[in-house]
Length: 369
Ligand code: SF4
Image 1 (cartoon, rainbow, N blue to C red):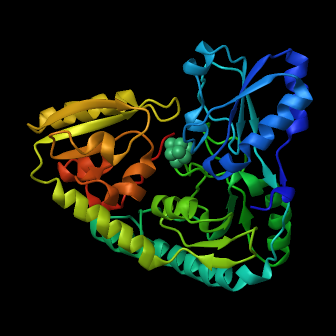
Image 2: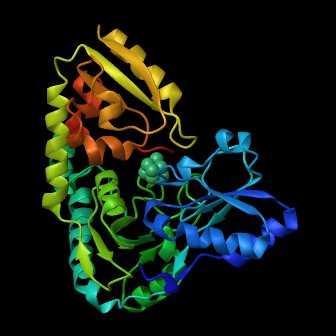
């Protein structure tokens, strides 16, 4: 990682610590920055005079803010890096540092992909208008075409999104893409998203029917996979670290959906289920878990509520149940299910398995609002 080009805003953090006269501060960083954490602790301590404790447990998002345990240690302020505030209250004063990256990739590399996707979106728009009212047969056809989800389009615009490190580029990219003839929208999401154009692995609430395809500024395929599963729309990717342009392939998404369908079939005969409840403040969906337990009882199955901070195979595989339903981070079931020895499915997938929902009406991504 090119640290020189990242803005960790340690000066602002030290100023806040001094202004508040905080004596003990917790630093929480994503996994990719753990190697640099000790150097940051040195610099915060030198500049602010406070003592710093690293929250060394794994941290994958702002859903996972350190809370009561740090309070019991006497921590007065949490400095949380790499993520933005979401609609949760950890009960601790928290200073969010987005860690922006100073690098602007060339647009040219991604333009041919965007032009192809725009044509695809325009043809979908036309065929949706010709089909008129969506009956089950049409929905099934659209679903197969749209990869993931039946989402009637009202436009073929370009949705411009990114991960938090690159959101400062969006307005400039919007202007340049509009000059190139694209109709561009920077989507505004719900309360879980702090900034326009932001996406999380569990929330793509900014999607609108007027967006026909997407450009994602960021690295890796974690957010792109979720966005395509959620919307069924074509997506191009431009990596600000390398300048590489690519697209999320139909085959990749189709493989994931086949795997999901296989897991739904696998729980058809399952009688007992472990229902996972995440203890992290932004993953905790207790009401959903209880609703699932009731649903299982309605179908003469058994559900056991299991609360965990971290979900991993060694912590759940041994329970004598036939399958697991996950209500913690939605990506545990989608991205990691192969690591588990028993089927691990989402709440929607359980509803399909029990016949409460129809897969043919479009795959429903498990979103945390
Ligand atoms: S719930 Fe999962 S996907 Fe959502 S922010 Fe947390 S770690 Fe990321």
